[in-house]
Image 1 (cartoon, rainbow, N blue to C red):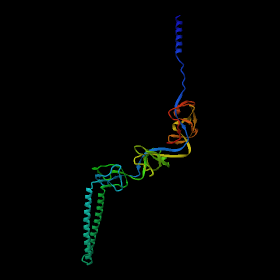
Image 2 (cartoon, rainbow, N blue to C red; image 1 turned 180 degrees about the vertical axis):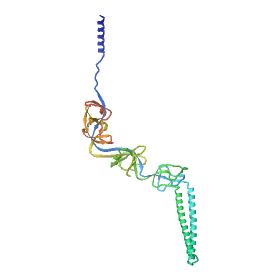
Image 3 (cartoon, rainbow, N blue to C red; image 1 turned 180 degrees about the horizontal axis):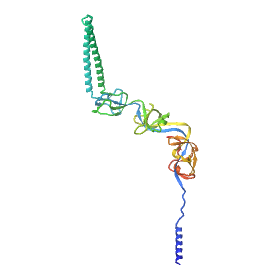
Length: 365
């Protein structure tokens, strides 16, 4: 009787547990992916780089002699004319050296005049046979030596006169002062840059180009320049100079793009954008490298159709930076998965993440 009672209790407990538990519903496996919509494009290069406006010629000016600065006539932004005084050194020592050179010249001229007078007297005495030819030759030699000393003294005096004139730093061109690197009272050595002057006239845009774009952009003929202050107005530009060495800090190659004089509103230091653009004869379809799926030595992509994916073999036509050119297998308008390709299987339901669509592949930037 006790055994039967235990069996009935166990059976009722199992019935209660079965009534309390619910059937677990199976959820459909929908995998999130990223995708783009394919488009054929004839754009070969479409790249933009920002830079700043600089003068075509910008000179670092310094004194040709050393000394103490006693006067500064310009500030940053001052418009200067050719020959205008920028800075002045203390000229006292240079003037004393000039006076010494002048005194040496006067002494040499006096000795020369005396030697010339003696030569003339001895020439007269030689005509009268009062002195020998050897004595006359000695007097001629003395005169020539005195004349040479005069020439040397004149050269030294002109050199000291130039040195005295170098105490005044003059502008070589018409332009604007862009930097002042020394102040009154400072003692500077010869050649130390103290003022930077940007020459008026031609201007250019200086940009930095990544190392993987240098050879490509060097061949682009269509170059457009626009100012950040006036983005709707663009003018044609031309690469004037491309640095052969990368900048050690930015690891980019400096390029200088000349702009026409018609862009008169371009002021030094303004921000500008340089756009490079070129087209190819036939349109191409490009996808990111991450869109390719490799299986059994074949390349394929996942096409999204009605919320599911299918594997489509493709033919690779080449590589363009981080993109792959697809020569066959897909067509414009199709949606291709670009992330998560290794986790998919044919017929897999997917949901596209973010705002990837609509989007086109095929434009190289």
